[in-house]
Length: 464
Image (tube, rainbow, N blue to C red; front, top):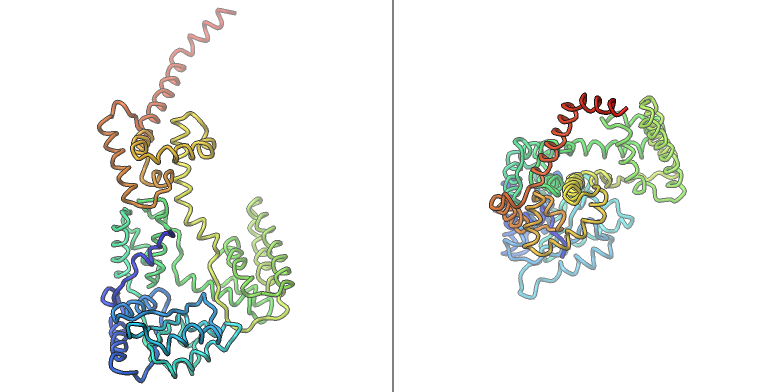
């Protein structure tokens, strides 16, 4: 069974549970209630506003409040004319078995125009004209929807969520997940979110991977409005008027070439689909990577300009036929992977050090050979408690070695281990105590050498 992410786990189920946008929520509810009497004048509604402001969540909450079923067509689905008619068209003419309404949700309606089959948007316009069921469209950018589609719908704007509201919700989530955090951690995540509650929740979840105590230094996310800027820069690089303009686009954002090449690499295959164009683009990027490698080895940052030129102007000239339509770009996956696994890698290394010290092996041997043994042994809960006590494991280390996700089970073992340590203080020595003993022994040996060093030399001399 897949683990539910926190956005879904803590998604509000009723309109009254949503924070912010009270006037928008009120307008949505009034529109929903207008369907109880007859088909209203506005058969469809567009919820528009920045990412993470609760548009899709509000649509789902409306359906729950009204007792409606949901038919959803999101941006990851094919939304050609045929698919729109097959999925949404049938639902728009038929109610449910119980006779209630069916809410049709079309997510990211501002991305219809980028589809290869541009009949999708036309199909939606025709669908709205004849639907007998309520339709909700969501959009991040209202004016990237055609004027004809906008005119077919009632428009409701969602504003960014206030920082104070995001802080309040993140603290509730942290408490539910048994997280502790330094002063200012939640505030920093909320400030970086720039009104994006969904993004803030994802950030909190990612930062807390394999840790139950978050420090300020763990926060590595950029402010989200900077992320928006990087997408604009990418568009300028790929769609500039000439190579010079493409090269100059990189100077409009505060990111070094080491970081920028990852963004270009992630999105070049979205912009260029012809094999010959991709081949040339990756050739120039490989040359850019060569210069970046020289910068790392020689600390000669003057070479950054050559890398920047190759990854921008070089990639630009690789396209023989430039696409005019706007495309959706993505954040480099490698950044998220390193970010999300940072605490996990620290926990892994800490655990290997403890096991290696107790078993008198190297960290590498403990990691590759002993982890499976301890994981198998700790499947027995009573063994798990005593091993956790013997090694003085943290909740994060218990979660890692046992591959546990349920915080209740983790803390049951951790609390019992701490209890064992307190009760059997003379029988079980904690890892910290072992370290201290080792340090004391090393110190005594050093003092012994210092104390008897001259005498030892004299004896050696006497022996000739």
